[in-house]
Image (cartoon, rainbow, N blue to C red; front, side, top):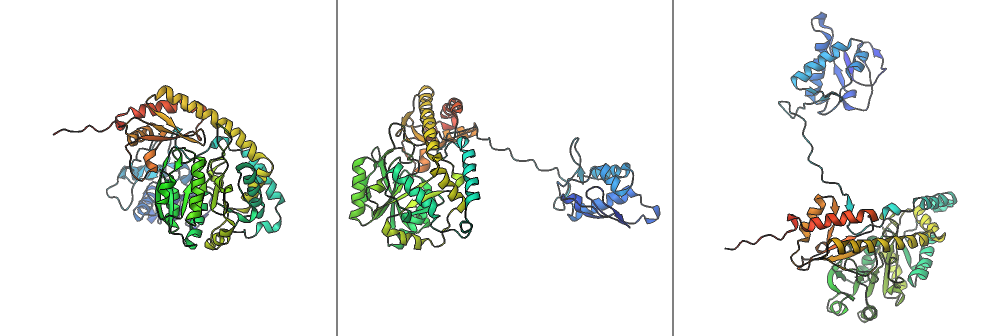
Length: 495
């Protein structure tokens, strides 16, 4: 008799019990064999069939076999027959059984003799508190209003909106973004010069390809800085030149000594130092671009968040013929949306489009949803609430650090979603990050954003994706991590 182990209620056809189920062990054809004149009892034949299927690899190690009662009903025999067969195979090591769990295959052709199932490696401690930079307050994502915007555009989109998207982005969103940037960021933006992209990194890749096509092979970046921006530039074929940053922002004189004719700069709030490019250096940087016949690429990634006064206007408005402007909703709404924009100089817009022929715009309905979200005033309302929340949270973090980590010094403008915590000489920030991770606290070392390790230890602490109530226990863990043996400088051996 042939048997397929499987679900209940299958019909018996001659000597075949046909059964179906998704589990591998419940969908394996077993050759139970004929009664053999009564010389081989049914439980022996069933055990032999199961043993053969396991040896052949048709029943994989770890797969569950049917409950004894269910299989007995399929075979139309007593439950004793099945339990006897299972018991024999358990004794031989082919099956294993635990109280409250299914009987499972515990042997495979690759293992002889039978072995116990491998134990899983210990899981890494889960992240309890997130003080790493890079994320906004994901708990505060405006789910209802975003859903309303998606629902509205899904119902109102005309049929041609559902066709192939414009690689530059939907004209409705490009117009809305241009208007928003003009009124809120002081930009000189127009529908024709705005391109919709998947975020700042995507926008930078597109810009670098356009610069390469225009004959520019060298790009300067801030140091320390966001590593993905360097990676984006090199992926587009540009040579990258780090330029140092101080309390007034990028060193323009050092920039002038490089062969670069383009530079990426976070003018409103540099990452990770948190400095703001001073007015004098802004003017000097624009003059530099004109002198070398080059371009400034302004990364406006979190400039909407300034807490001591109104956000500084973008550099792009000072000379729209020399400045590209990159922005997104990754730091204001969520990086999961994958929506950003790129404002190019008018003369470079055709080059930009031609250099990115295969670049794809984000989904059209998402673009239209963002346009609706902005046009209805929901984006401005969300930003106002976020500024209040982040200002209060930053103040709480600074106060708590002052009380619990008095040896640290907070630096950075009252803006954005992170601060810089300078530590005493000799502090092992790398060890502190490891110790914190073991305790469930996510931190970032400033050295992660430097080309080489520095003698000036500091941590980059983000406060976007953590609640106010989590800050005191998170800082307490930070204090313990800094005092952990992992963060202690190694003892030097004297000969």
